[in-house]
Image (cartoon, rainbow, N blue to C red; front, top):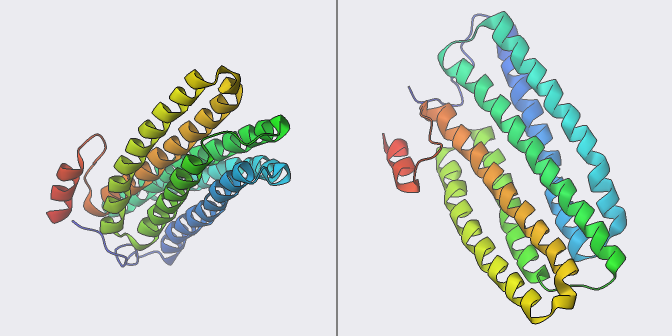
Length: 239
């Protein structure tokens, strides 16, 4: 059975409704903070803003605590309510999405740490154009994945999965360029390696955004779409 936005509003217990909505609300609140983290981490690196980088790393602790709190909410619902069918899918999907959001926060903190290193080195290395471009894409992916979750929008979720393929291609191209640059100028190796790790973190953020999108499709369609192609995913949506 496909899920709609009204599918969680027909319980005998209004308190159960409220608990489910609270989990969803807290997840989206966490998602908003994580989305801001991604943008700030990228900005701190490109603009050599060490103060902003420090703030990004400090906020990671708050994100970690939010993950723990929401996981506890999900555990309590399962233990007390023993939800069935679509309600259970919502709790499971939320718990998985929270884990991916926490990992996005970790990757953002990693980029902020690398930004601080690059600030100390005092010279802008090659690769910032790629970081800005891929960074903008994965930030939008994160935003779209959260929108898909909020609206139970499988079409937007599919678009996020499709976008991840493009990010992977751009990441591979950027890696080749960075390696070539280091070979041409061995003195740049240390600086460019920090850029490479930043690009890697961005690519992983894209992966986690895709995971959230895949959980939306699971939530709505009841079908696990991990590890299948985009074409197969489209067929699931058509059913």
